[in-house]
Amino acid sequence: MIRNFLFHRVHPQRDPLWDPMDLALFDKCIQYIAKKYEVVLFEDLAKDKSALSKKNKFATIMFDDGYKDNFEYALPILEKYKVKASFYVVTDCIDKNVPTWTHVLEHSFQATQIKNLELPFDILPKELQSKSFLNDEDKLKFAAQLKPFLKTIPHQKREEILLSIEKQFNDVEPPKLMMNWEEVRALKERGHYIGSHSVTHSMLGTMEHEGDIEKELQESGNRIKEELGYFPTTISYPIGSFDERIKKLSKKVGYSIGLAVKQDTFNPNTEDLLKSLELNYIMKPGGKQNLEFQTN
Image (cartoon, rainbow, N blue to C red; front, side, top):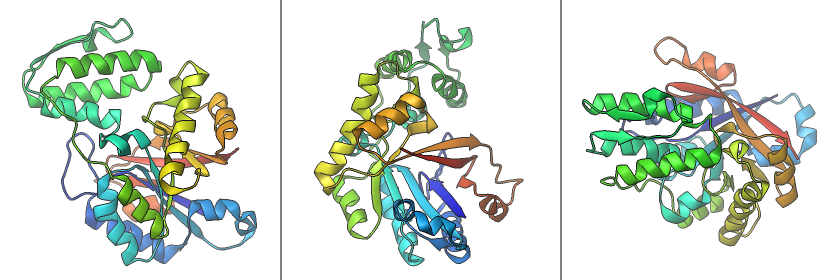
């Protein structure tokens, strides 16, 4: 039996749009996992197929994106309980110290002082094409409506809309929240695994041209190889977006394993944390995600 636990951010500062996991809660999760299971690297377990037939209760710990707080706050807690984790990084985010487009989008609505937004794109519902904001709460409410819709549309259309927002909210700079390669390398040297989460965090399954998909897969793996000396075994598909094309191209460029998340809901006010962990859900306040994986 394998339990896979996926995290993103661990930070003491709260965020109204995408709240990081609190340090105390993360400590509680890792303490529980380390006590309940034999914690191993996912990649080690995947290589040792015989382990899957054993009666051991295995668990793996994973992080997506490559946020600096993984190094500053999560790493000391992992070391406290003597467990290793796999970190799947977005290589362009590491190179440029710019978060994923989902984070940048939310930050833009939080930080801008611009009061009006025009998005004259037919693919958007009418209520998302034009908006005058009454206050900060109104901006956040609009962002909470817009982001999930953007995840449902073709890649190129989403890119056009994001560029339009960036141009209109020209008073905002993306926050500097990502690890650098020195920190990523330090994780590797301490026994953790570094895998790919694409170049730009694009939703691969929504991309039309296979050449663009292959570029996201190939160049992220190559970048990791340049910095760490190996092409990663594992690709974690951004936002769980993949299809048969993605699986085929992942194998073609050199990955052995593809990971994706199936999203569900978690309410920390009404659901029990440890019960959710027992059910193999990956904890993030406001949402829980069930990990799926396929081997190429």
